[in-house]
Image 1 (spheres, helix red, strand yellow):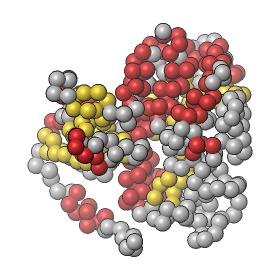
Image 2 (tube, rainbow, N blue to C red):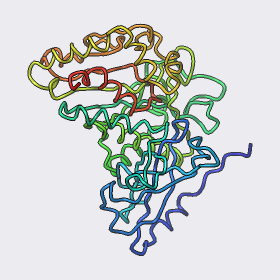
Image 3 (tube, rainbow, N blue to C red):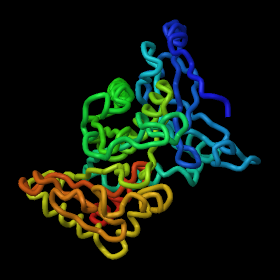
Image 4 (cartoon, helix red, strand yellow):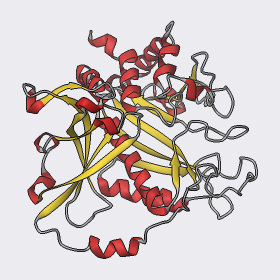
Length: 375
């Protein structure tokens, strides 16, 4: 393998300042066949910078190259579903266009057929539409780990060794504790510029590990924004020459894993006396068979990745059983102390893995806790 080389971004900056002749660049982003993010760019008219997603053009890609279509029928269509400002091409109204994927059908609306099997957004949107009156809010805490380009050494760790034990790294400052803050700060600013409702950042328990929070967002906007934020993080890391990992247990042993804690509330839960609705949600999450269903949905491997993390240690509950408690980070679901005191608020599902599919997770939580009231 050739040595890793990094492009000189100062040279790129000279070209980024050139006028665009009344055109904009639109970066179409979608989820590939193995949960990875893919993207490609097309030129649109300047007026399209303010267009709604439904007014942007349908595009296509070669699904045989992303494990989403066979080679003899490889065209997959990209349907725009959310638009954000592009922080990597600022100054000319360039945009990021988050899309989901469909089979072609000349007789379908806008030539769209059925969602392809890897399109998890379509089912999530159906659920969110059915329960729209419940006004679900989500706040998702995305943990991630930075690695050197070798993908083996966490950023800031000694080669072929380990730093001191956990303790000083969480919400830390200092060269000896906070490894990769520049990446975290750049990503924060990129999200704010793009229009992502990022609500905060912090250093995590394992050195080289960080967290940011997206939300509160309503319904389908929440998983859309989380995916867009991941895209921005990966692009920021690309510019810094580091690698981001969403593995839920990136380093074995006495190190914390990485989760994607999902905070949830509905209009009823946020209203006076909403604590009763939260307790009803706990009963539904703890019903027979539901723990297994949710664990299978909470990481792309059907629960196997998360089993390495949800051991009952390192601020996790065991994946084998459901539990909930007030202010208890060792439970499957934590009820904030203020929620108990005010008898209204939200709950935090701590089981989703850092590499979870946000469409599957938010949809599953709503399917179990809220959808029964709308059937």
